[in-house]
Length: 105
Figure 1 (cartoon, rainbow, N blue to C red):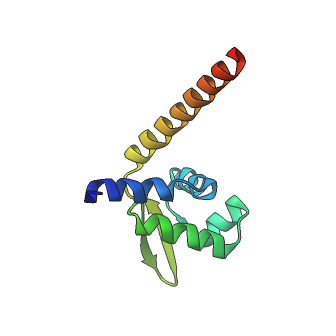
Figure 2: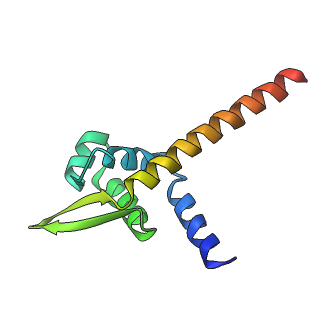
């Protein structure tokens, strides 16, 4: 697998968890601290931290320290929006095709 395909696989893996997609969608509104995200998304701090680590490791999210806290934001919000929209459209298409084929049987 070429390096580009490996990077694509890494990004798609990061997007394979609904919790990480919720987190990314929330970060589209702007920078947040872990505490803000746990409050807004009603997730455990450890879960939010693990999701952020995954998203940061694949390059989708960055952080900046401020005092004892870190503020997290999306690295390329426009591209993430396009990717999530494309995934939603593909999922709808696949669901529609599956229903069409299932109904034809």
